[in-house]
Length: 460
Image 1 (cartoon, helix red, strand yellow):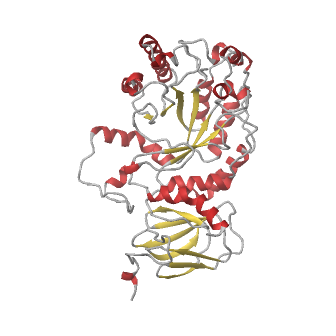
Image 2 (cartoon, rainbow, N blue to C red):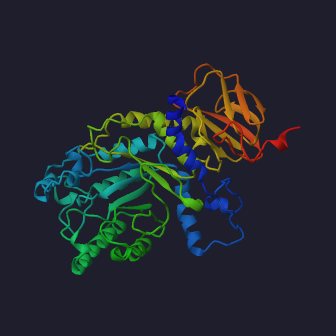
Image 3 (cartoon, helix red, strand yellow):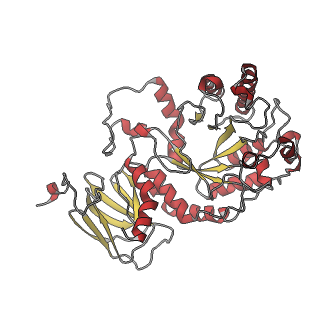
C-alpha cells in the first residue's frame, strides 16, 4: 500500500472498526436492527425490565448530548508536568502538600469555561472534584486537605456547579477512588482495619458530593486501585448515590458496569447497544502540561465527533486549565471553531446516530439519520467525489446547507459531480445522500467481494 494510503488507513482504522461494531441502542431494540455482520438479532418482543426502563429514562438526555467538556484541575496544575506528576516523579508527600497553600486560582475562571463549553456546542461538563493526588476541590468535612481550607479559600466545586447551570449545561462530578494522600490509600489492600477506614472515607465523600450541590447528572468514578469490587463495597456505594440522586447516571469505573462505558483515548463503542462515552485529551495529557504541544485541531475534534455519533456515543473532550484557571491556547480557539461548525452542521452529528456499516475512505466517513447518509468529507478531492461499495440505492445528493449535486451510481461505485474545486468548509463538508435499501458499505481488501454480490439484485 502506498505510504499516503497506508497512513490514511491507520488514521481511519478506529473509525472503521468502531462503526462496524456499532450495536443497537435501546430505542433500536424496539424494532431497528444494526447491520453489523458480527451482531446477533435481538428479540424485540422481550419486555425491558424495570431496571432497564429506568436506565433508559435516566440516559435519555445523555444519548442526545453527544459532546461534553472534561476538566482536570488540581494541585498538579501548578507543576505543569501531567496530573500523575506526584506518582511519576515520586515526589514525597512532604514536598507535595505545600502546593495546597500556593494554589490561588482566579475568581470567575470557571464561568469562562462554561461559556466556552456552551459556545463549542457542548451540552454537559464533568470536572475533577478529587484526583488521585487526594486534594479535594470541594468543602469536605472528612479532611482538611481541601480547597476551602487551603490556598483557594473557597469551594471550587460549588463555583463549577453554579457556572454550568448558568449556561444550561448538565453537571457531572469526577471522583478518583484511588488516593495517594490518604494514609490508608494503599494500606487498605493488606489491612482490614485500614480498609474499613478508607472505604468509609471514600463513601463519606461521595455522600457529601451527592448531598451538598443540588441535582447532579453524572457520577464519574476513576481508578479503583487497590481494592476489588467487594473491597470497595461498590454496590452499596452506588445504591447510596441513587438514593440521594435518583436521576443520576453512573459510569463503569467502580468495577460495576452501571449505566455507560468509558473508553479512554480511543473511540470504541460498547457492545449490544450499551451507552458509552469516549474521553479524550486535547493534547496527550489530562492536567495542564505546557510542554506537551501535540494539540488537536478543529479538524481532529470534528472527526472524533463524527466517529462518536456514528457509533451512538458521546465525546468527552478534556481541557487542563492553568493553575490560575485560564484555558490553555489553542483550546479556546479550537473549541470556538468547532462550535461554529456545529451551528452549521449539527444535524449531521447530534441526531445522526442510526447504524451504518462502513469501511475507511481517505476522503471521509459517514453518519446516518433515517434515510439520509451524511458523508463527512474532510479531505476534499475537488470537483468530483467517488465512493465505493454502497449497497443502498442513492436517490439524491446535496451539500448540506448547499446545492444539489449530480450523481451517477453503477453497481458498487457512486460518483458525485458538480462540486467546487475547493471545499465549502475546510474543516469538514458534510454531503447528504438520500437512499433506499440497505445502508451498508462493502469493500473488503480485494477489488471484488468473494462469496457475495449484494448488487446483483439491483442489476437489470
